[in-house]
Length: 115
Image (cartoon, rainbow, N blue to C red; front, side, top):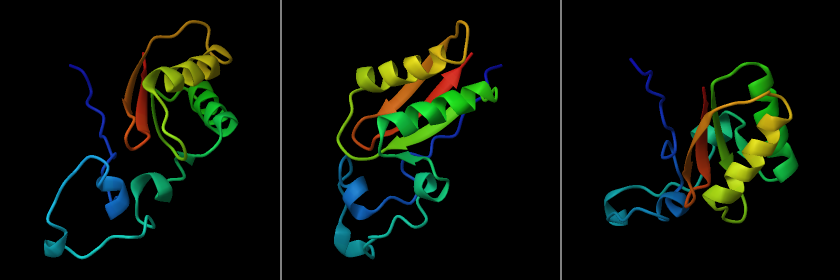
């Protein structure tokens, strides 16, 4: 039986973030302008630089973690660009690997599952 992994892409997003791919009647809810309690921000999983992101992936893989969650800030990235950075990071620490990437390019959030 395959273990399911929890996805936190939409956990405590600001209105600006959730507005990227959701529509709602804003008059029915109080505005959310802080990411203080956002899962990725609170868990220090946000990365602005390619080097920091690559180092984070390599460190997690080196420690044997099978699920790696992240959020990329700044400019939008394509899944292929993100995959390329992850593969570079993993090749530096693992001799052969199998992985699956789940990436939400609108929010910049993702999850890498290593086999």
